Length: 126
Image 1 (cartoon, one colour):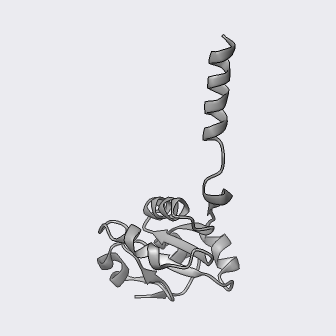
Image 2: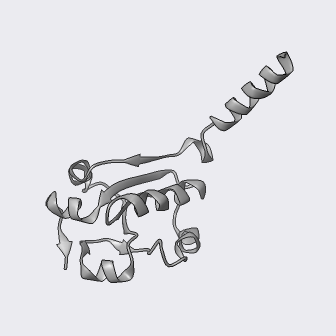
């Protein structure tokens, strides 16, 4: 009985330890991002190239999560910088942020969907 309890506890604690030095993906609203938009950071749109070309936040670079090259491209990025990721709804940017966290990036923000960011008054390029 004690052996089983010990194994269960060991499993629980091994799963609850922070990943990659304790980095976490932070999710913030469009309004929260707008309030800190003047801070240093890299703005990344993870939508498709076609979505990006139809309109994107000013200053954003495009790193398409769906085309299969995202994980390869982040290998060349500086893991110490702060990254702000967005997509159409916040789903793909959340997945991209998780990949970055697993790769050892420390400062990652999922800032949600493009329309919400645009509606919040952030500058766009269409």
